[in-house]
Image: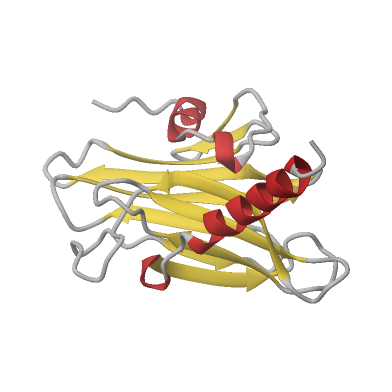
Length: 195
């Protein structure tokens, strides 16, 4: 039994390292920095393309370690962002990630170049109680053939405040970690029905 404990520890330690090493440099689509946890140190967030073509893009969030001036992976949210994962993708479908001055993270996706249904979406991530949660969901859409089929919505997920097409309303406030987020939550909060 005594010999088994070091073997288990080695397996667990190398398993964690292997998971982080699975990020191929050519799969990094976008990255940003900011102070997510308000400790005065620069943190990082990345969008990473999938291993398999056709899968959605992952979000990786790193915080600066308290004891060492190194980045530590704290959140992995696979398959959260739709869009191009390579340079030869379609025009108008490039995702982006951006650090905001208030310490939140904006994750943008869009379809502005293909088909009649055009849209753009922004998830606003915030660090709350030791986790990254979806604080906001912004969605705009229009139909290139039907000018009456369009709209916009800004949903503060944490408070439940919704502004849809310029009118304020209320939805249930929610605290949802980015790992557990589904865009349907935002669509439902905004009262948007997809055909």
